[in-house]
Length: 136
Image 1 (cartoon, rainbow, N blue to C red):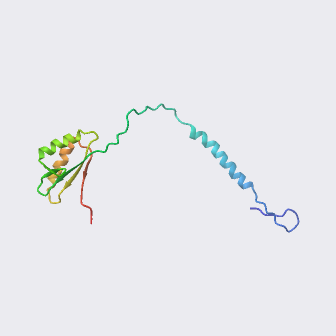
Image 2 (image 1 turned 90 degrees about the horizontal axis):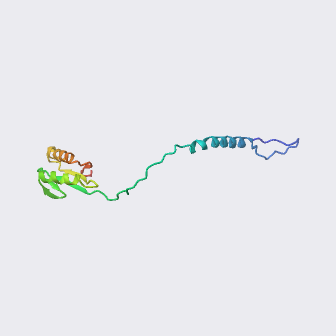
Image 3 (image 1 turned 120 degrees about the vertical axis):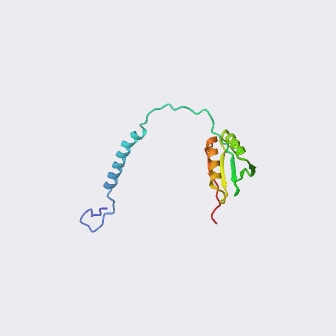
């Protein structure tokens, strides 16, 4: 800010120099004038319209447990190997597809859990998860 005297008196001029402010405003104006046409320029595309409504139905969650003896439990109900395979095929055919949550006992052989994973993959299951105990 420039302060000066108007004449030979000892009074100080109390006016702000507006020139730097006007310079900044003009630069901003020029920048906006240049950028606005760039922002409006776009390719005209005729996009297709969606005809179906999104589904709000949540997929069913299947809990498949393997106990320490290698026995399968389909939603807490004991099931044989063949029954699990048939139920996995039926669950994979549902829309929306069910989520498979596998709970394996820490004492069970990993081979039994791997058999369930392979059967789920062959059946066409897309969403497979593992359930563990939280750390205490």
